[in-house]
Amino acid sequence: MAKPLSKEMFNLVLTYLNVVETLDKDFLYDIYEVVNDGIDGLINNEENKAIRFVPVNPISVILYILNEYVYSIKGLNKEQIEKLSSDENFASKLASICADKYITNEQLNFKTVKFMNKYNPPISSLELYLNFALRSLNNIKSDNPYDNLVSDMLKKAFGLGQCILNLLIDGFETEAFSTWRTLHENECILICLIKNGEPMFRSYFKHIKYALAYRGQIKSKEETDQIFAEIKEEMKKYDLKSKDMKKFIEYGYLFEVEGIKLNDDFKLNFRDGVQKLAGLGRYSKVYEMSSEISHSSPLLLFSSKEYYFTITIKHLYESFFRLEDIFDKFYKSFVSKDFYNQYLVLKSTYMQQLQYIYRTIGPINILDKAEN
Image 1 (cartoon, helix red, strand yellow):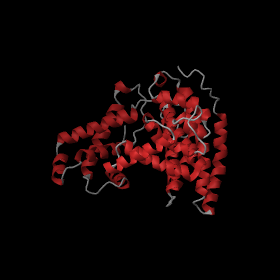
Image 2 (cartoon, helix red, strand yellow; image 1 turned 135 degrees about the vertical axis):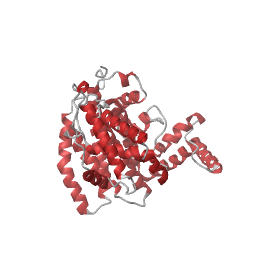
Image 3 (spheres, rainbow, N blue to C red; image 1 turned 60 degrees about the vertical axis):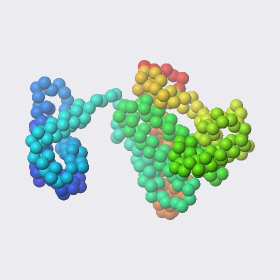
Image 4 (cartoon, rainbow, N blue to C red; image 1 turned 90 degrees about the horizontal axis):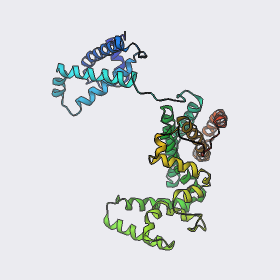
């Protein structure tokens, strides 16, 4: 039987959860006891003997009750809340919903095939490094817009890395692989900006303004008209037609590469533009495959989970190593020698393990059969 927490322990949990004092704790405890009995009845029902239930987590139960209750009284005044709490039908319905949610979402939640959990070193070691980098970047302040852009792009990249790991842990390999596509785009743009310096940074910000105008995000019509006049004038310099406007807005900052001209080797797109100029053209095929999944091709439905797990984590690691190198140089320029040396200790401790993990990931040939 799932033994309920005592009222004293229940109130202590509410204190630790920073529950506002105005909530009716007696009412909430009564609901908790009913919910606990309901859960216990379902778990010990003869018809459910074949189901492997795990021990009831009282904190999860309480969180379902708290969130359901707070959502129910949102926007009500004190008198309305008191009236609702004294309504037996409301209390019964609230308890029933919370018991259903706990049993369905925590005990009977759908589980797909998973290849690793969050405690496996290929996941936990990389997650540790990502957490460190994100915390460190969050503490860096600068008045330089170029530095702030690098910091924001690194934070977004490492955040996408966390997202990919979580998707892999939950068994969503194809979704993780399509998310790597976004991470790869981000890292390629960042590499281009850093390689080409201030002129490209300036142009990149200018093209952000162009994109805002194109999407109707500039409030002033007069300013919008001025921006479009500027766009058309810029396009003339590169012999671009009106049909090329969207591509120019998205990728025109690449013209800051010295001597670059539109030709068979360089085009205003990602694969023949950003990716190639970042020196990562070798990812063209895998990027194409990820794009197919992003656009709901049959690969999204009929795919080998193990194949996409492997290809995703392998390419996540490769992106991470490149981004970590950028982070290293960036972090060093903003922190004291002592803080940087502390970072080097972490790097020496975990980078060797991460590189070993990467080397032991099975070889991937993107021409291998990916379907089931």
